[in-house]
Image 1 (cartoon, helix red, strand yellow):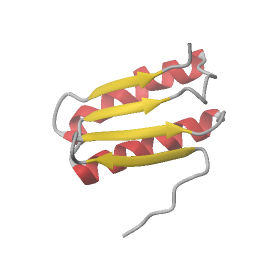
Image 2: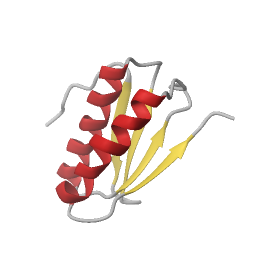
Image 3: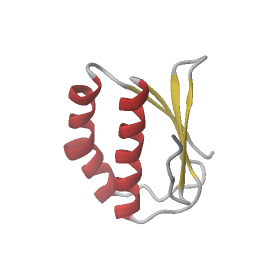
Length: 94
């Protein structure tokens, strides 16, 4: 079954590496960022994957609001939903 992905994020699963790959394709609003991370979490649940590689080289608008949301709202929901510690690695622009 194929699902529609937004234009600002591609999500793929690499079964050979057991890694979920998320690539931000452009700058995003705060609400798009939140929605994108929830889409990543849904894909991770489908694949039972707790290793994520997140490419943010095209999305370099990290701000306090986004960081606060990640730490206080999003990240605390990840381990319970995936059944354990999840590892997130980021590709950043120099």
